[in-house]
Image 1 (cartoon, rainbow, N blue to C red):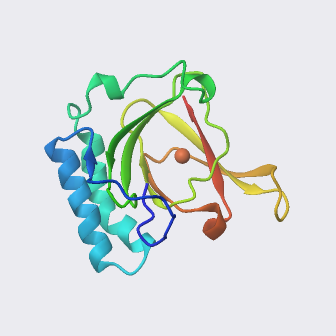
Image 2 (image 1 turned 135 degrees about the vertical axis):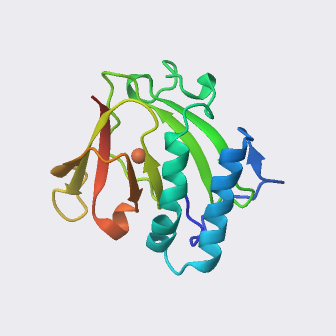
Length: 167
Ligand SMILES: [Fe+2]
């Protein structure tokens, strides 16, 4: 997730946090930062970085097992695990692994930031929703996807939220 163009008011960290410090992660973060430096929009950054992100998703060995586990005590519905891999000191960029166990489903959600979302292992359905009415907290399904990568943007700019479910 990334919100390099938005101030969020969080205190900066002392330094970047490389929880998983491996060459593929270093390379992706470097590619994102380079793309942000020369791009004019989040959509352009996503388009430029997508090949690098897709490469990461096809490499079978870089993500240790500890970051591929569900988390029954997480409090996220159905034992969904969320594992931070990288966080920028200015809090504008992070990389994390989300593990959605078979039989679970995320709630309909909005990341409140733009970013790239990809599928590393398994299969899933993603369902996209629009608010049923203006300022509504209920949503109506608008389409499904089985794409392995996608750019996502805040609900405020796209008017769609989504949920994912392993298949
Ligand atoms: Fe999501």
